[in-house]
Image (cartoon, rainbow, N blue to C red; front, top):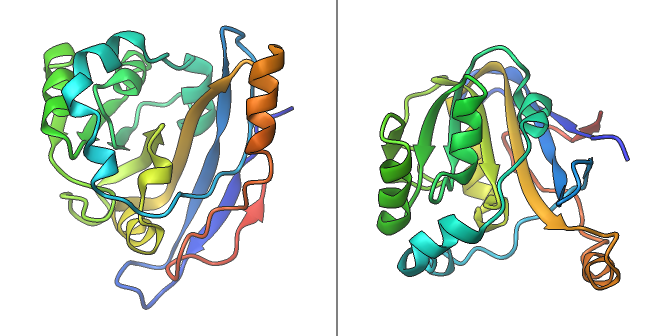
Length: 212
């Protein structure tokens, strides 16, 4: 299946300039295979305390969680160097792929222990404490906002407004996640459980989604 995306316009009158922002919901990466496809995903109910639960195992998390192919980065943000904000950057697994692709990365991570691991591995990355619902950056300050394995932790009504605020005109918002290799029977059954996930609800700042 070819990668898909969605388009959304930010609306005037919501505290951000009226502009068009491309919103891409991600190639789901099949590992160890290199092929990938797109699937739309909706956030789970907002539970702030749960997304702070990984820090005690930050080193193990960084060692065993899979990375992402550079092709996925090119699909999300293109090949030209950009200033990219990564939300929920964790220990920097996707951060390192973005860096290796030539982009300037600003990493936002709420968990101090995860953030410390990111800085240990990528000391040159601008890294801040923060959340998708309260991004500590100025308006229109990045070319793209991305997240890897983190989109479902967002509180959509608050997060999408913040994302719209910090993206420059014509910028990209993209979410990416790994899924099990569906060529394996057990993995295929697990994938089927979540096959009917609805489209994301982007909130009042955005118009209706348009399929790409």
